Image 1 (cartoon, rainbow over the protein chains, first blue to last red):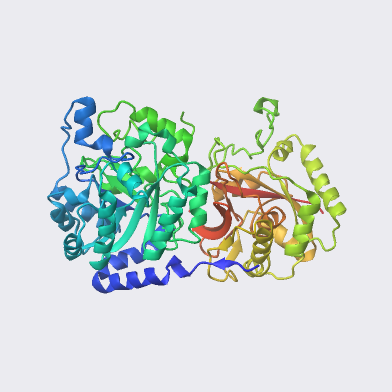
Image 2: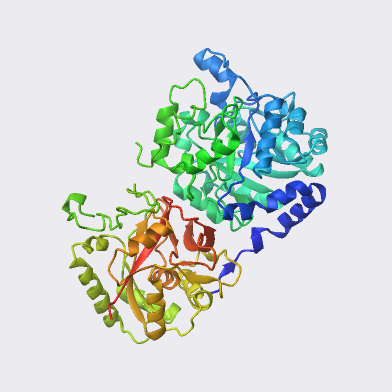
Length: 370
Length: 268
């Protein structure tokens, strides 16, 4: 008969301790993170910036959302080379400054596999780890203890590590990389020993939420005290060839129930007292290797190119777009059939992604579009 | 099934699904809806509704189940007799009774009476799921009634007697300012829904926001705002199979996911 109350600001004691530690070491970043709630009350946003400087990867995963951006895909499927100008360290420094001026506080280095980038350390420095909270995605292949300690030493705060099954053979098959499960297990221990914050990331395909294997992964995350980020399979990238992977609401609702028992969450899970729903633009943007900004990792429509348009205007375009800006509880590209259809039609046959501003998204978009 | 739009008279203020048409409004509202976020029409078993209102909210002490049915039927009949208004009854309308309460502070009443009633009603109906209030501060002294909402009429009436009404979540994809504009064009017994009526509807019908095959809309307590902060509101929202109460900025904007309610009260 009682009403459950969530703790103040949505921070559990563990998160509060991490925030306090960050405030000691990097007070400028901690202050920016603490201002996000008041920014949201004013209608301002503070999305995480995912930076895809390079799509090089040592894996060929079945569900890769970045596959269609990769040189290997363009060569194999279209027999072309991407001649578009790529972002460099000067671009990243400028983007970091623009983001800082807007109060944005978090960068995720992603790819491809970030840890194969020869200039990874320079990229971290260009982002400026004293001004932005730096996270890196990784498949874990190269993340041994020495590498983890090195990441920590150059200012990386957090690692997001992909794990797609608790069944070793299934993970390796999904990742098309024998031995990758063992490397993930090694990477978990290495990251923790090096003092990096760590979350596991796993892709939820239709029906998986009900399986014993998924429950085992939740148990594993709970036992290790690690957050488990669940990313719905989206009908983009390599998954375009696997529409059967796309989840139904029941799958999402099962995960919502599991959140009560396990440290499991999706991008729609309320976090730190913030209830954004779908985080397109409001909570995340992606900068591609050609300086295009997309509203989430899985939507291949650009909101603008940072060499032509300031970040502030690009974010404003996103927020006034009827698909992206308004609050909604579901995953736009993972669950809304009408948007999925539009996205599939407008990306079909495209050699160069993302679709430029004006051809995918535009200021004329309407929810009534077919 | 809904009738087709062309069977409605031109003067209807509501469409074939019971949505109030946002014609000629100045504030943001979507002219058309693709009905992506929608409620599953609940089964309205009047004795059960009455029993829940009585058990969990203490409402209907002086109103028998038969009286409740009769008065709700009369409300519906009045609406159906008016060609401007009849189509509202094609949408979802939840009968409610508000208990007579002497307390004058809306926030206190929500905290002490209505939110616990929802927790109790929802918990009884869905023992495996939760009602969660994500708002941790007391609401006492925090909330005011928006000017132009007519909602003060509902509150004043509930201080004098038990109030019977129908709650229609029919202002889908409106901003709060647009909802205020719209209510001014409707008959005097229509008020913009706020805390008591929306909550009573959820006590009567705890499954209102439960949908398994898609997503229901968020329901604003639109007639209420934080004192001095008209852009901040309170709402009920599903989270999977669970129900939540929360606060968020709406900043006068419209969203496909957001809906507001109209309550139709008995004329006295």
